[in-house]
Image (cartoon, rainbow, N blue to C red):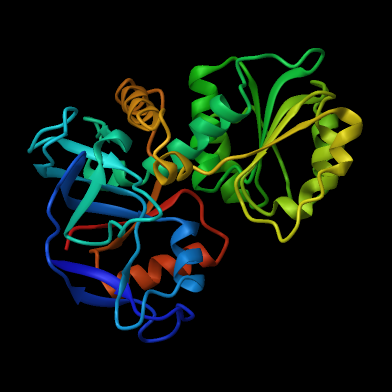
Length: 337
């Protein structure tokens, strides 16, 4: 089968940073589905792994943690899907990725593809949807009010992949006032279109802008990018006893300033459930199905912003460069071989 991989970590500008390879088709065992890949999207995790993780000498590593496709075969323990089903999912960080013609994935982290979307539009959603859903409901527990706080959620980095879907999920499933940050005119328009009630500019001090809205201190803040540079503003803006979640990788994170307000700090990593085979791993199957329902009902739209081209090394390098620029809005997708 055709696949896109790499042999050694290199800058994306290097000729062999990503290469086209031919690999054996894997076989489904246990709870695995063998999925014929129709579309994939690229996330910051693809870039991080490519830059920092070297495969064993003489081997190649296939990236890819977002996919939509058709089930071709199932392992003997599979009960949730059958061959011919259209699915979407984000996979597991400790297994070969989805940038290949065929891919193995545990059924318990796979959802039914939204019927109203084609494969490309669906491939933009899984990783970011799982991340946003888990951050909002499992970590921040946004259905539980913070006493005295504004029923508001501040999403830092609202125009990125995770921010784009977090805004929509919060609007579709809660009564929260959603504040999103965006710094460019086009991204400010984007987050407004996705449902943000208010937009503030994260290239300027955030806390004074939030205070100027006159709605009170938000009970919940979700930071998706550049968290380290925004900590003073987050501490100032959040309500006492509020809840703060982050997903990026600051060089260091000083949580001491949160003590005075008794703010709880939560990490979200959507790979944790599959990585440790947690007893509640199937919740990712359930939440992806919920997102499909919301999409098909017209309550959430895809965050696809650009189809880069077919799934090959040349186009994958373009998509990685787009993600590395830090100026993406929504998601970059590759479709077909």
